[in-house]
Length: 393
Image (cartoon, rainbow, N blue to C red; front, side, top):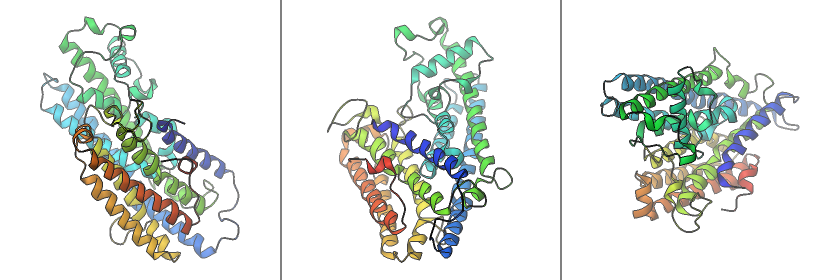
């Protein structure tokens, strides 16, 4: 199966698991120690209240800021040259980092495939689809941008609108946006701005819906995660789903975001052993390495908790008598972070001029995920997700 589909399999599996679990029976796995159940529920509550919920709140805040910055940019007299464009670009990066921080903890509402696709559809990005959306809105001001293709309405669409300077469409002759060639450059800029405003507002609305779903005075999904109702058949099943999510480090970070550009994994260039810059994330913003670091930071928060006293998977390892595995987990996370910190943006340039740094980061992430699969999951009696178990890399 192509590597770019792994993340959708993982997100879909998480949703299906939740639906199946909602019809299941008791809150304990047969024969599980009641003390273990209590400890698992305590860990889930801590992860929900200290890590996942706050991370979603940050994402909502960053998208709200981005929404305002896009409006300010579009209100300027010359959006193509106004300093507010740079502010909007900075706001985009903050929102994109916040979403990437959430990816290794995708569970429940933000693991829903439709929701995730609408927020961020990479690697299925398509600048032509965005150009077509811009032209359709210019023709019909009442167009509902939320009903369009995923790659026309999320973080990746906004990247194209904010960072791609050329006003020439990327569409082939047979798919030219209707009426685009007849517009003046100022009209094209105004049309892009109008579309960007709609997309930014819709993105913030989705982020706020996620925030409400996790808020204690809203859907309180954290309570569901910890076993306060029938969403999950057991606390152990919920933790297994979270360990599945964190292993997106293997398929999404090591595989798609590092392995594909290195020519190790499937890539759009069709190369093996030869670098493929087309596979690099955030091609217009040229912030692929920055987003990689946000992915790892999210995984670290989930595995170690927040701060010196935060609860994470490492605490569960210690409780199960696997202190050496917990110590090594932190060491592997540190090594992966250090390796990624040595990879600068633009990642395309680093891939060309200092490829060894990218390969070192790939190897460090691989050593981390190998430890998670062979030590953490084994010690905690958790299952390896199918997408990882069948991975040959």
